[in-house]
Amino acid sequence: MHEISIVRNVFETLQETYPDKFERITKVQIEAGLLSNIQPILIQNAFEALIMEEPQLADIELEVLLLPIIAHCAACDKDFEVKRHKFVCDCGTPSKNIVQGEELQISRIEFLEN
Image (cartoon, rainbow, N blue to C red; front, side, top):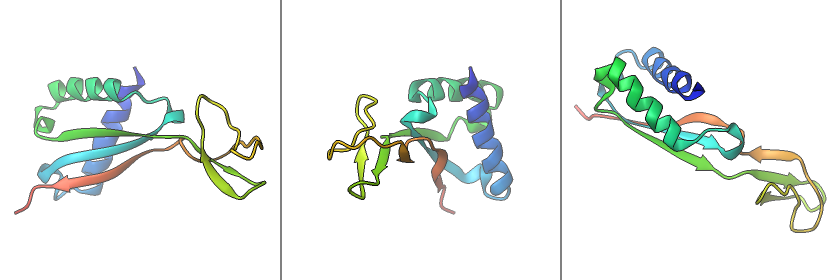
């Protein structure tokens, strides 16, 4: 299950980036594009498993936002949402120029106020 390594990497990155503030993190938001092959429920389950190993993470809320696939059409110079895996613009032109949907990133971190 690659979700456990993803969640572990997220918290390792946060610990490295915020060594003095890591204990004050209350919420972490992750954005995952539909093409990243990430399932929010599996990420949540992996997070619960990680809490068993590292109980200090129990007070942190983890939220996963799924982002739709957005492609760009060169013919009409517009972005469009890919639905049902059809990479075809409303104008009828196929496009494989993906502008959103492959990412997996930490998008927001909330900290406990002093």
